[in-house]
Length: 495
Image 1 (spheres, rainbow, N blue to C red):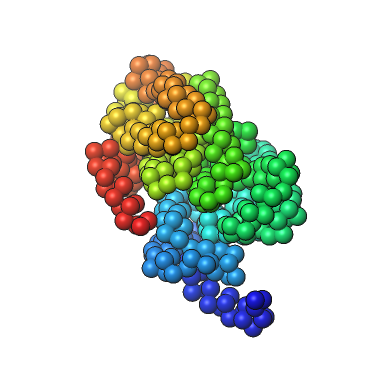
Image 2: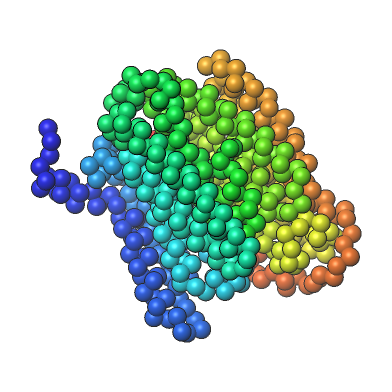
């Protein structure tokens, strides 16, 4: 029975009780803008610390919603958003990434790190990520993606040079195209089903009765906006230029948070009962094979460390897609394990690259010759991170790869889909390929002699920066020996 206007308004008001973190982000955005206007002429601006404190509060508010996630199966705001244990976990990860991004911005010591606009736009981006993962209606998901995209375009330009301006413009062009294609696909889906509530079983039942060719076109068009954020092949062309143009702290955020939000949308779709009828598993497997291949083999030819990491990120997107192939708890938990550990590994990698760039003022791997002997602590840390990215022991990267391929083998035995067997063999081969480019930087650090004079004092690294590195690098090693700490915690949280 249709609800009256007053009943709908009452439901909207009730729904606000489960929307506190998002309301907090809106208020924080306004507060940051106001504070920046007040302090914009003063040398000291408290906006950075205010943003960190705000993100900590949003983290706490997200955690307090955990009991409500068991009572919110029907969704909020007339069923347009939903909150589950998964969304709460991802909200916490996004706030953690927001805090780490601010810390990395301070370490970069660029002028934008004192700009209130930078922290305000980062807050808006986090709000967009929340909407992306909470949306159970395609319009909400689209609004979240647009908010993330517009904020990302602006953050890319904060390096304030010709290269960042060009990168931002390319990002806008590619992003606008993918956004338009996605919106066009959404219009097709609405025409075919009369609804955009994509978590509703009726939506997929209606879609199954439509001509398969039309359904395929509509779904691919709609997913293009999501796949653009993950930077999977063939939606990856923007990534290398943006990684090279944007501030390194922003690149670190781009390499993790929007990607995980978009992957979460696909994870939710993968758990729908009828999704196997639409060839979703084969579609994801093809994307995974293409991304792993293009990402790894393109990274082999890179001499620019940032572009190498961009193609590495594309390959890792392919590995993360493997966690979406199964409709069981083990696959979901392996995907989450890989996501969380990838966060720590990637933040560690970009923090170390930031130090290399500070010393050499260069993105070129050839300019890192001999730095491992002058800065042995830095060199050893880079070796650890690079073997973690490659998926070798004794790092949690090995555990993550082991779990993801164990999940893939289990799914293959259950489905007998030959594409999964190809993905299994080709994925293992590509791990060997990735070793060649991941170990290139350590090779130049320790086995090539440099001719350029660099500072030799350990004071080049502030003690607070060293503490941050230890904080993000420790899980990379500890979770290899105690991976049960994370797996058991995930099991308890999600059940």
